[in-house]
Image (cartoon, rainbow, N blue to C red; front, side, top):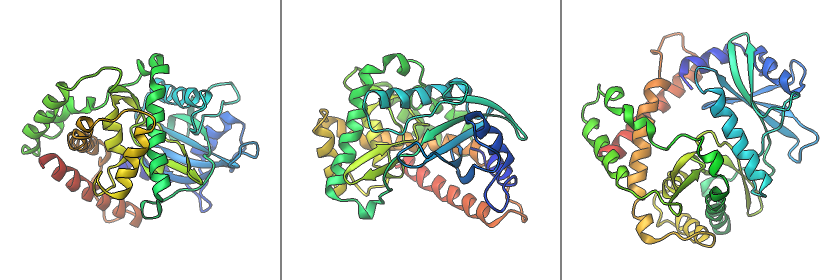
Length: 324
C-alpha cells in the first residue's frame, strides 16, 4: 500500500494497538470495539483477533482502502483460499462474516475498506537459516501441490489477473529512468514467447516465501494469497526462492527435489528462473512508484524513515536485477 495510507492508519492507533478503523471492520465478524490489535501494515493492514474455536486461537483481520484493491479482487482471493482448504490443501482459510460473506466492504472513519478475516495458520514461522533439508523439501512439495490443484480451480483462475500485467505500464511509469525501458521491453518480449499450456501455466500463489508459511514439524500451512495470479508455475518458484543465493544452494536443491515428488519440473523450466526473477523485479519497480507516494518530511516518525530507506534499497536491488 502507499506510504501515505500506512502512515494514515498508524495515526489512528492508540497506545495498545487499537484503531477505530479496525473496530469498524471487525464488527462485521461480530467483534466488540477494542478487540482487534495491530499486527502490521504492508500489502494490507493486518490486525490480530482472538478465535477460541480455531486451532491457532487467533485470526487475522486484513483490509485495504477501496481505492487500492477492488472488492471483486479481495473476494476472489478469499474464495481461492477457501476452495483450496475445502480440497484438503493446508492453507489458512477465510472465516465468514456475520452475514455469511468472506469479504466485506466496510465504512470506517477513514473511508470504505475491503476486509477479510483469515484463520491463523497453526504452527510457527521458520527463517531460512533454520530451515532443515526436510522442511525445504516439504516447501517445494507444498507449492507443487498448489500448482497441481490449479486444474480444479479453472473457474476461479479465470477471475484472477495475469502475472506481469503491470509491465504494460512500465514505459510510462519508469520514464524518469530511461535505462530501464529497453531492458523491460526485452523482458516482455521474452515472456510473450513462452508457452501457456496447462502443464506450465495456471493459478499461482505469487508470494510463497517462508514468511508466508507456518510450520508444524515438517508440514507447512500457507497463507497470504494477495498476489495470486494466473502465471507460469516456474515464475511462482522464482518468487518463492528469491531470498536464496541460488537454486543450487542446499535449500534450493531440496526445494526442487521436493517439488519433483509431486509435479514434473524439467531442467529447461528451471533455466527460465533468471528471466522470471528479472520480470518480478521489473514489476516491483512499477509498483514502487505508487507505493512511495509522498516526499520525506522532517516530521516523519522513525519507523517511516526506516521503511522509506528499506524501500529505496529494495528499488536499487530490483533495478540491478533488471539491468543484469
